[in-house]
Image 1 (spheres, rainbow, N blue to C red):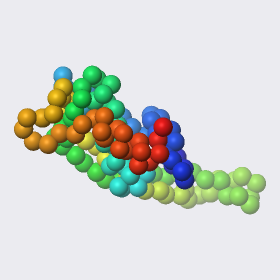
Image 2: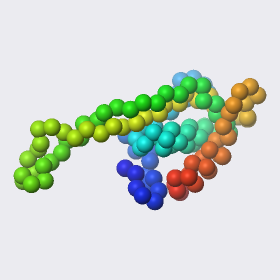
Image 3: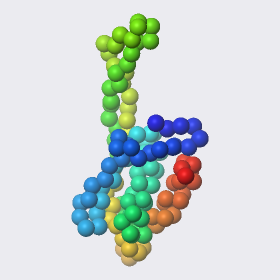
Image 4: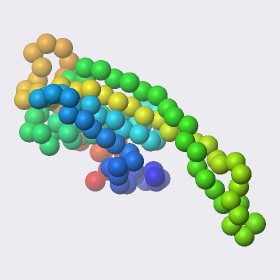
Length: 128
């Protein structure tokens, strides 16, 4: 999923989702990676959703983070591909942010510049 030099392809259906909650409100979830990276990549996706919708700024109005345990089936390598009885377990982190899309910087409260967030996160994680 993640590689050494850069993150590579991020946006398969298993890694992010978004839901339109209102005219200018979206709920964005990013799933995977380590906790700090997952939060950053969720912010990156929030910035992209903002720009794709024709807006320039966004406010985070709610944020959640957590993790789930996924089971991974495996094949025992020495027994001619017989499946093991107990699967491997892995922790998968997720971050969900509910954002308000804005055409300009917020008059009240803090807002992010979507283009600045996108540029900063792409640079940090070497995403082209």
